Image 1 (cartoon, one colour):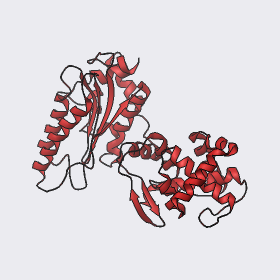
Image 2 (image 1 turned 45 degrees about the vertical axis):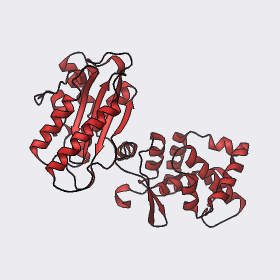
Image 3 (image 1 turned 90 degrees about the horizontal axis):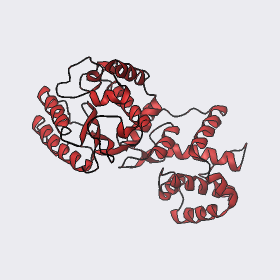
Image 4 (image 1 turned 90 degrees about the vertical axis):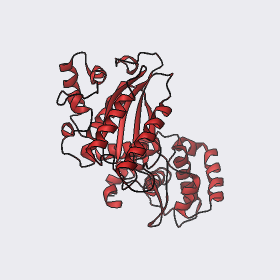
Length: 345
């Protein structure tokens, strides 16, 4: 049962399932009053009741709103999100008499390209209230589609049929499949990747002990996985992970201080770290230069030389999944403890 034909409602061959996320700035509350909650829920449902639109899932949190919707190609998902954002912003301002913006950024919109990805997103959203310490069990949160889909709560305008159709042909079969899907809570690493990809958490570049720059846009899954493998939301921790791996490749069994030494081996190591960081979308060459306290122009020349050497190109072509696995093994064998994001922030 593929994503394009697994739900009822929008049957166009070019229909796409989208993940949409809104985040408020600190001090704003999407759930400030019962009246506001009801208006937001009703508006979100009504926005997807016209032909070509199907709302599959939603969850309303004090600082976040998430939805999964199937939209036919003739409809603009950006236009739909802008319209909802405009109304939502006005209602929140009316409910909270304070000046300033409502949203931390624009609505994050991302296509869901497979049924596996769709089920994964539903699992993450089901557990999001628990992650935000709003409840202890995913099935107990009242402001989401999950309890409706499981038959624990009336729909109140929300049709859970399309969501159940993703999981089974009958209500009983679908509900059992949904419970199996959400049985296991996401791990901390899964949450960090998910949050980074949606801009709910932003990577921070540090120089020394001081934050130098906060990235303002969500990052892709590759860069997010690399940052999380570093053990925090900090780019410099991910760069240190790459540095350890590169040193193990070019100078096995030895340690190199890439920040202080300037011999050819160290220069080569810094250039390879920069090449990997840039190619995997972790950060710019300028950020790597700041990390090592080197001139960006000099590092760029060294990167060019690195890419011209066949033995270095072979190392740089290593899949990221293997880099992360080998880095974890290196840290375990060396007794190095990964940084915990909750402690580093």
